[in-house]
Length: 208
Image (cartoon, rainbow, N blue to C red):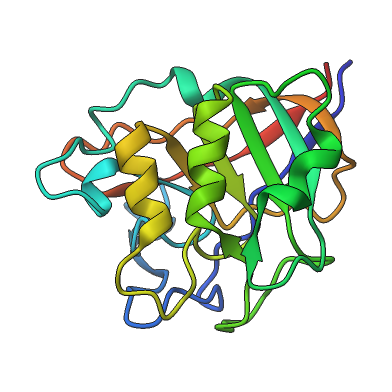
């Protein structure tokens, strides 16, 4: 049986959202007891909590919602590249060692030894020119183990804008702590949330 790596963080009330975003909460609306055969709950959360796929609508007015995007980029061959300790921005030189004869359509970058469990502004993001370079190499999806492809304080969201310009898809908040560099099958399908700007994903990697 092929090995699976679960690269999704746990989602609990302690999961840190982006500042100002809606954290996870859960309420029980029914519990098993006399006259009630089931447990039922309701959850409230931003679709950006935990491992998630941004929709183009998140950073492009009038762009596609997550329920409208093609699923193909979220499923298939990908490469995990380590850029641990790269600093504030993932640049081309941090990825060249894993280029080989080319890149598959999906690239996930590990930037930290251990995925964060509390909010911090000090995380690594993609340099905008890195997004453009990857798109030029045929990459259709990029992922990262930090909270955003742009720095926390960014108001221009230059890397997100390059995703929009080059029609790339993105996964954020991944957990790549125990994943060696190399090629895998990525499975990280977003929910068909017809009007939403993002969707949680249960992201996994499967050995080839």
